[in-house]
Image (cartoon, rainbow, N blue to C red; front, side):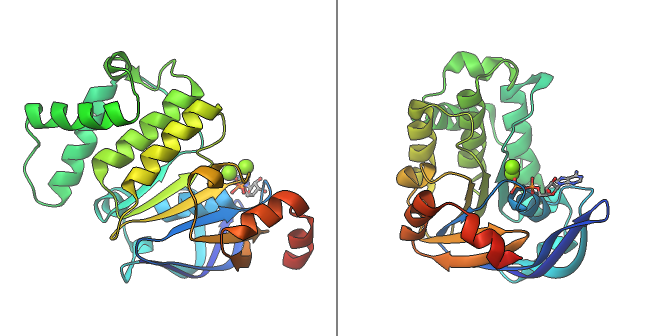
Length: 249
Ligand code: ADP
Ligand code: MG
Ligand code: MG
């Protein structure tokens, strides 16, 4: 479903990704683990199309189409979704207004009409219930004053509503207590399906107890340096990343 070939990326003359290769199959949950500063967030931003990152070489193919040729909104319409490591607070933008705008933007790009208000409310309420999101939260400005766990649940709510093909979760576990981690993980697990793949980026193994990956990749210094099954995450928990730092060097 997603194929990254020889991706070379720099920012402000610093080479961050050094010819990264990665394949994620249809229906697969792939985890990327790695030390801080290895380029995990850079990879997620480049997939989503954030400005400022200079792609010097390589391809990112989603179902065979190079997403590097698409604008961020075209990528979203093509089925890419990025859940942020640090969701932004947007004062003045109501959460419901934002969610409806997201859904309608996606529908417009696909040549579909706007969602009706009753359909929208039904859809949001059903998804919010599953993620144990209080209705009061939906009435507030997007993420403003939300706890860390509430912000992450809001990211997964957006993911559930947009029904993406390829989801990137960048350190979704950071700032989550154990209850929020369980709720977020259950939300993700409920979305696992044929036709949908996940790239779960995490520094720690504990998220992968809840979202059990099919494959684990270790990233160091802008490269995937090792690939294995879910047991690789447990191995890393014991031995740390030291071995892989030297391997990348
Ligand atoms: P990770 O998510 O694995 O912790 P990042 O992708 O955030 O790693 O960062 C990889 C490297 O890129 C780090 O050395 C970081 O300092 C550098 N970097 C990230 N963003 C910028 C930026 N905007 N300007 C300069 N360097 C950056
Ligand atoms: Mg980091
Ligand atoms: Mg990061």
